[in-house]
Image 1 (cartoon, rainbow, N blue to C red):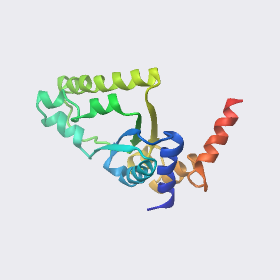
Image 2 (image 1 turned 60 degrees about the horizontal axis):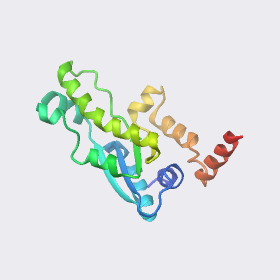
Image 3 (image 1 turned 90 degrees about the horizontal axis):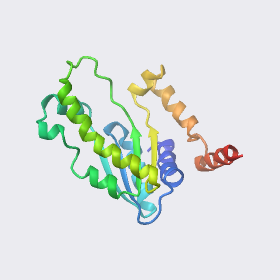
Image 4 (image 1 turned 135 degrees about the vertical axis):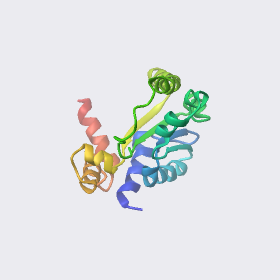
Amino acid sequence: MENWIDRYGALLADYSLYLKEGDLVYVRSTTLAEPLVRSFYRHALQRGARVEVELAFDGEEEDLIRLGSESALGALRYGSIDLMNECTAYLLIRAPFEAKNDLPAADPSRISLRQKAHAAFSEIYFRRLGDGSLKRSLCQYPTLESAERAGMSLKEYAGFICHACFLDREDPASHWKALSARQQV
């Protein structure tokens, strides 16, 4: 495993979510971010947390919208609502697949069913953020799609993330703590 990925996983567990014994962490990402998910998983376990992982695969949502029954369109993954209600920490690792520009336009009524299903999840998420009962972190994992959106090569984009998150330093969390202290003044 690359050292920066291990530092990223540790930073997310220690600094971003400050995990402790007994925390239940709900992680969502795509299969592209598996190296970071695995690093975070290990660091979270070492801190005594339980981790539940949801990984989307390339084309999953498009296939569901195109082929799924109305019942399937109106539902989220089994257990995701319960996890959002019960977790103490939530981590979203953004790792987008290549944009699909060649898909035929989807039926708006099918898209509407999907949006309604996601609305219940979002309502719980924002309520818990508002009442302070949920620790959460959102981060970026370098993918070709993200790099292209940024006008960079994948290597350049990965370097950008490493530098922006202080992952090119020995102890990234200490740099984040110093930055936070400066911002409090």
